Length: 293
Image 1 (cartoon, helix red, strand yellow):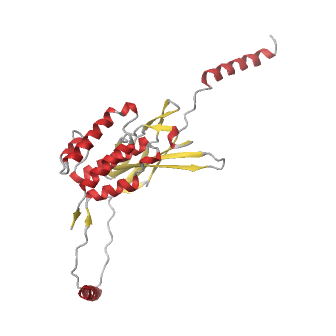
Image 2 (tube, rainbow, N blue to C red):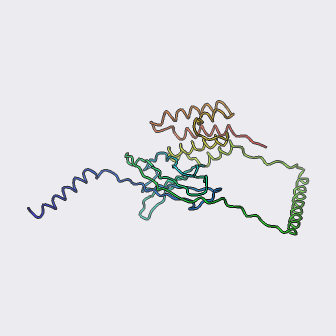
Image 3 (cartoon, rainbow, N blue to C red):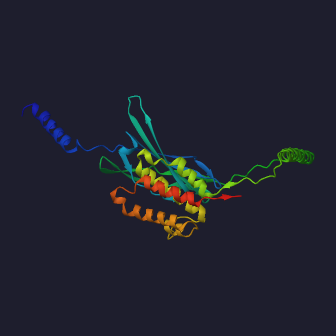
């Protein structure tokens, strides 16, 4: 047998492997998990974070919704997400997307967060990555320290507070009488104006990130409905049912109902345009706001 035969055979096998697998992109997404603390008091809170990263820009990878982690001895209180892109020394970019889950401990002892599977699409191909499991200890509640006053110091503090209150009252009264005005109660922003400002300051529909903008606006609407009704979106309590149960301009509410229906029907076609959704929520929150004196 010629000496070159094994080398020739290896070259042929390598060529076949390149032909079969050479055009398939490697899974590009790295996953990193972290906890805000390794020991959490029973009356505290722990943040479990999953950070995904890849070379390129945010739009290179489409990530499906990350499901709530399965836990032991914990209850979910809230969740959030954030995006960022940084440049490297070679002139390229690295994109990061972080998902944060806020958990409340249930009892002292050991807590566990099971691995989460995250599905995403890269160059038209689906991939799946898994986060690491997390374990930490739940300690007894932290007792708040109380300041100890000696009997003599209690009287001293009382006299000092009384003196400061008298000076404050005389000063305010002097300026009010001088200007001929009566004290007024500071007006507070109601929930409608609060979420209207959040929409205007946190959502930018012209940045081209349609999927992320729609998801963030739905979270904003859900937060408004839960804060307005004092209920949570779970079980049979749907977004539409909570919306129907709050008072407001029926015409504006009907437009939001229509928008939610169109979102469900247009998911296969790429989803409702973020600019359209922004305009409907802007009108909804604007109609819901009023001043409370």
